[in-house]
Length: 459
Ligand SMILES: Nc1ncnc2c1ncn2[C@@H]1O[C@H](COP(=O)(O)OP(=O)(O)OP(=O)(O)O)[C@@H](O)[C@H]1O
Image (cartoon, rainbow, N blue to C red; front, side, top):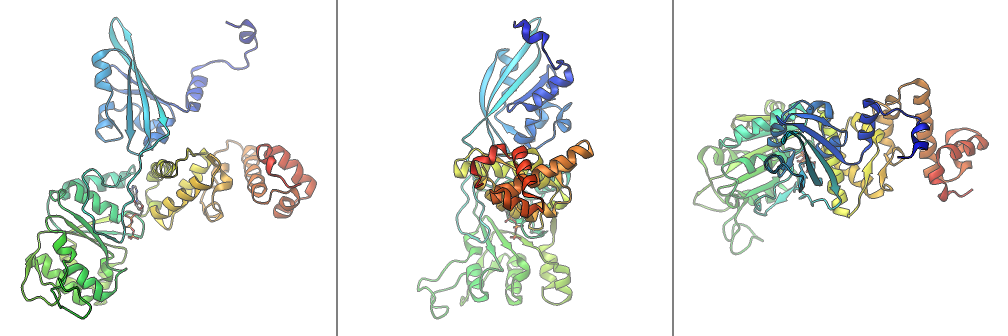
């Protein structure tokens, strides 16, 4: 022990200090007692599972495991062996972890277990879900990951698990980019038709004439330009599987009548055909329009609306389920790190700013922003990397909101503005102009706040 160090200590190692130290750790530290109750977890769990430590401390470890936050399980092995165990685990956000479980024994019995998890920087590649027309049969286990942490979405997923096994038609309503397609796929994966195909077609992106033949197929010589052999439509190809009709509100009225026949009679007539064909499919439809209003305006068939609306699911916009934003941010961080072979992380103030933004384009917009941030940032996504549109429209200035005092809030805002401007202009003269301050003041602030960026300076 170095006595010099002890006498010169400037901090006292209280439990509060220790807690802070553990929160600064880049590894996850997770402790359960002998009854498998979670007694401690540091802040890293937010990055790995998208949840705040306070929401899981006190809960049963197995319960959390059963909810699918990570896998495979290491706990039964360590309780059986009473020895340290190492394992590679995947979290549902897409992180790959090297986890070590260390049992702490008292009288040869486990008193508690400490798990430490380190991220392995080769994250698994996520599948990119298709949004327009997907004619590929789903490979088992290749369904997209559905991130849900908010009470609303957890309830929706539970509801989907219930209705997936009955074969009724489902209508998913929600703004663009809220995840209607991915939810349809999720329902299919849980349904009795999961071994069958899953096809997606967007009624808005295909011209009317083409939409009819894409859906119902056609017989040989049905029209000029038709293939000699005829063509099977998606209703036939999706036999014993699921057909997802996106943007159903855009379907022309005459096709709505044909679709209603499929739903009622489980049969359809290919274009130019004379003989009905059987259709054993489940239809899931989605819309971002108000179909009730369209029915009143006679733009959508009332009978079809009631037939589709047997089970309806409302996907709330992202701004109404803020608890999903952090897990989605990490999910996309892992996804794009893996895709571009990068190791970017995100600063806490940025995370807060992104959470405070209202995301008019919903998850699709968040996904696009995260891709851009991961690709363009220097290792850590910082305030100055965040697009102005988000910075200026975020309800909370996260930097300021995180500060405890007015002085530190002002200081943080000043720092962010100077760093953002310097990163953009790389010259004290231009920073002075940008921030409307004197050049000598700009130089002083750049020295104070931008030490790590000054290699780039022009002046
Ligand atoms: N809960 C989620 N977990 C992970 N990714 C999601 C989630 N929800 C949506 N996404 C992703 O966001 C993007 C948009 O989702 P999706 O295409 O399902 O939205 P949509 O509501 O069908 O949009 P539109 O109405 O424009 O067709 C997709 O890339 C999807 O993978």
